[in-house]
Length: 246
Image (cartoon, rainbow, N blue to C red):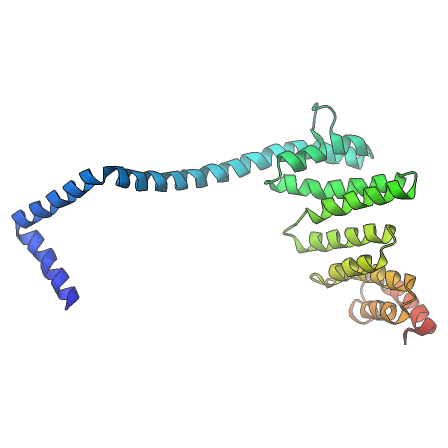
């Protein structure tokens, strides 16, 4: 019934010029009275669309700039110039990883800088003179690595492993085990997972937990026979079983 009324009303407007003119006049009158409201709504919609386009452009531009800064910083890191990699070279070629992670935090390259910061901090830790300095650098590495959230599942597993390595170096074995577990369980594959399981087993060994160590090695022997770590896992498994892991 309602649909029929609406149809009849529409036909009346088409067949009756006076009715159509009256409707148009009312619409024009409403537009005049509510001009500011209508313009505000339209302006708001245009602003939202404009911001969306601008933000997409900004992210792309931001990431391009960050990449240009990142390449030389990574080059310094690969050349073992850790200080320049982190702090830059006075702006000649790069502001350094710390600056990139800070100034380009919303870009992919800016986020990636955190991974390299973590690696650089671990290198610094390995060269630190005393235990306190080492632990401080490892803590900085852990913070940087936890700030990096990659989309790639292989990289994420590697990040978990690096954090586990940092905790292991700090002799915080329980935390190291947690992250080695995460690494080994994150999208398991025959190329990297066995390495994480070896690290997990060795961490259990430091706790004299031969049973769980044996289980980690056994997983490699059963599920990753083509792995380069297979022979090593067999030897470690035999040792763990002998010492109480049956």
